[in-house]
Amino acid sequence: MTSSHRRLLGAFALLAVFAGAACGTGSDATGDASQAPESGAEPTAESTPSEEAAPTAADGTDYAACDDGSCEVVVSGDPVEFAFADFTLTVTITPDGIETDTASSDGTRSGNSSMSGEGMADAYCVAYLTAGSNTMNCYPDTDPGDVAPPEPESGVLVLEMLDFEEGTAVIRLAMG
Image 1 (cartoon, rainbow, N blue to C red):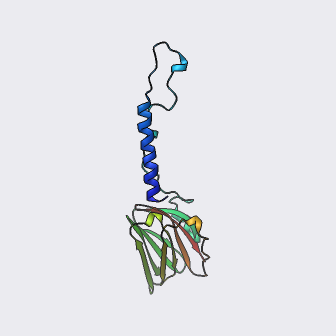
Image 2 (image 1 turned 90 degrees about the vertical axis):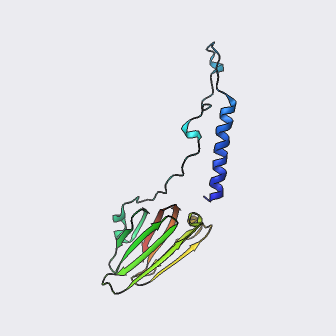
């Protein structure tokens, strides 16, 4: 959902709150059921704009699900380290982007990549990672569902950023 869609949705929700308040919810003292207020006419917490829900993933924050090289997890806060046979991957989500660092198991090679900036919430990013090489590309205004999942090559870990909201990302890992 683009930021302009979120603003439009918020404007409609705010308009609904004001319209509900202007309609009134009074009833007369006769107790006539036909004069009872309509359900939902009174403002409730649900009728006010709310914070956008945090991104969710199939494996949640169960990072052990990634041990086989295939998972979909939510990452935020502290860096998360994933260990594979040939290398270790560290994923860090910043307030406005994503960083990846890889290091070979024997400590002889490493690589890193970073993508950040305005528009990350509306971008699809994919990284191809090995012990000594990190290549990341982001495609602005692209929904992950509009792109065929990449086929990882043997020995290459593919990281896809499926969702991003201010310091929280949903990533999918697939080892080739």
